Image (cartoon, rainbow, N blue to C red; front, side, top):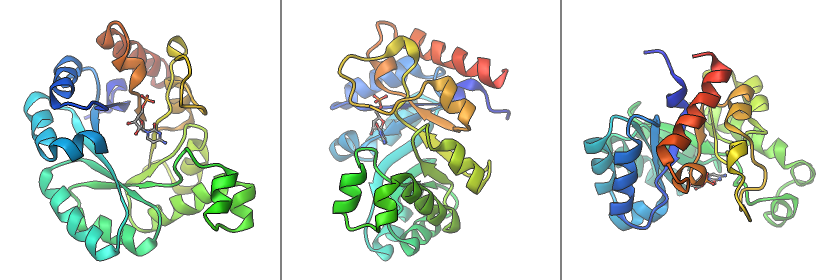
Length: 241
Ligand code: C5P
């Protein structure tokens, strides 16, 4: 089936209770392509959240657990993830072997997205983390090295900022997914926003982003469905359908 503008939109279920999450899944079913489950809800409710989404929606499911452990443990955990029937999961790009084992454990049922460098890092934290001077001077280079690890390990793609998408796509090809958070439509610039290096949905998709994670601009809108539709229209204007 041809990808439509809706399929680009990932809505994070950043809620403390399953009831709230459920109400947004009901509301946004048919208006977003994927729901993302984060640590807060998964730690509280576990696989029940996955079952709830599958029951109420046909959207895809992205489990954002950002795994990082010894390869054997990650492989075993990925076996359980694959059985849950989620489409995507995140694993830190910390070690090639761990990424390979994550992909193997996913058995082709769950795609692995590498987390390159968390966006709350900067030159200072990269230096404090013991990285080479070249990466301290240019953390972007570290993003590309790590995306390369994910690509070589057979991952489905990476999570990166909208400003890195073009480089990632150029280096690893169009089939390697680039998933971008930090999305702010021009109509939604939030006061005291904690997302600093933001891009609009149109900019991200123009740069080559395959999936955009967009939470608060939809969640906190007076009419979340209308907000999602505005995002979709913005993407339609770029992709032409
Ligand atoms: O659009 P909003 O800022 O509300 O989206 C926040 C979501 O995106 C959260 O689920 C957060 O975990 C995720 N995220 C992020 N920045 C990253 C990676 C993921 O905000 N670099």
